[in-house]
Image (cartoon, rainbow, N blue to C red; front, side, top):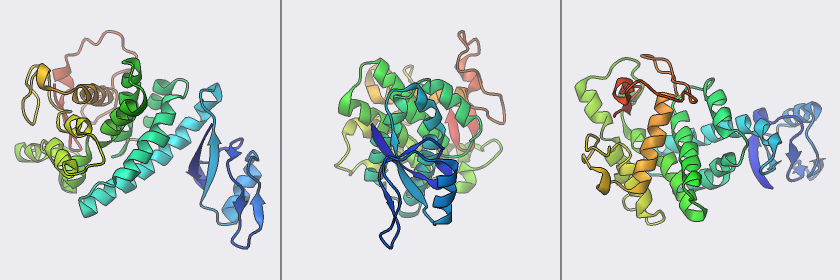
Length: 285
């Protein structure tokens, strides 16, 4: 079992309260272990309770109903962390580690995570979904490759932080709805280096994470950026994140094309045809 703090609007009837909810007067409003009902959720709202710790079971078919509220809660926390980077130009590593280890890793245990991911993100196309999606996909790829323990956590964290450099890209460029100019493209293409520089002096994360962020737009044939590295010079984390990044790009709707099916078995369209730019996110071969 794991427990997670969810905002009131994320609660679903049937969720189990992890800890007793106590008023400032000391009165116990709801006992720990109780199952939430629609009436209890209304009461919590009336009492001014903003969030509740709930029990999240591991590896159960019932986890499907937890995915959407957990995903939405994680998105909001990512947005808050990115905003701090934008304002202070420093990365709250402890917050991102908590998200990677206690929120995102939990989603990997949920039955049908790719199904859930495709369903949820179809209704939530905004700035921070991509970082969360890439982190989840990195975690899945890592598990398929046999990553466990801290290595898996670090890979998930790399996926979550891969676009952290975009937090200091001017918003008028990042949020531009139309095609970017050459100069604007050059600004956006600096984001791997900017992300690396934000984390370069952080001693509490491994160098593999920093290099994965720096190299996530490199390509094995040397056509990527910022250094034009080839296969043997790209680290494992960089290679995995680049695949997750491209997969999410291809399976997400953009203004210039519809999304591709996550289950399209034979992709006939060359990757170069789905490359381009929108909202500051580069789609490179």
